[in-house]
Length: 365
Image (cartoon, rainbow, N blue to C red; front, side, top):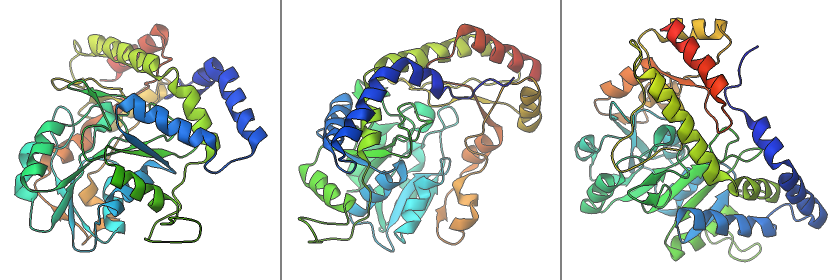
């Protein structure tokens, strides 16, 4: 019997009574779109991050897209993104007919390398969009400093890092905008697609509220182009319940990651994930580097231990972006894409299950 890669059932069983009550409350009042739980959820999420404002949206992709739309990214503009990330990071740029500009990542954190940024900046650059990959925040101070020097906007793609800290502040409250995802497998996930945008600008908040609902300001009065980007009330009810135990779950993830690292760092043939200075991680993924990944995964599967690859190629190699992007030297990202492999990670990992995973890794490397 294979172990679960992510265990959502154990989490639900722990929160069942509260989740069920919150969902029933929505069913009773019947306000499925923009019901009272939506504003309650936004206020709770904003408080958690320390941001002034939060706008819940239908997905993490919508969060990125709307943030770019709100700052006026248009055809011909350039947005600098890391070469190693999920497709949505570049997809939203191309959807606005702007140009994704790919830069390399750091070999230890897999996050955007600030030292590679300035050579990629041109007169067309409008936004820098670092990704806080696998749960660890990118080097935001350095990135923000470069952006300020060149009068650029910074949007943190925090789809995997909600709840992580950097120099005492939370991810999503480290730049002009933070955008996260509540996809079920994320550290804080709802029971469907979902996401949120964070900002400290009242003007941006009001604009994003309008963009989220077809650009309306008042019923049937559309002052700008927008999308149907609302997060439904039921998902907000689920998030409110999960948020009540989220800090505890972060700590459990960190304990599990520490236990993995303690065991793996003495093994030959495997490289453990590393945390950069002045930050922690919410461990959206626990990701090793191995040389012969295909063989490793096959052996792990035979032992009943699931693995996953996030991500098997760099974004500049995606066919959909042919001719639509600019690429700088991304050799570190390419090497990472051939070596990374993620192991089961969630707050409800028991030591016995972790020992099974550790034993399997030792046999497979």
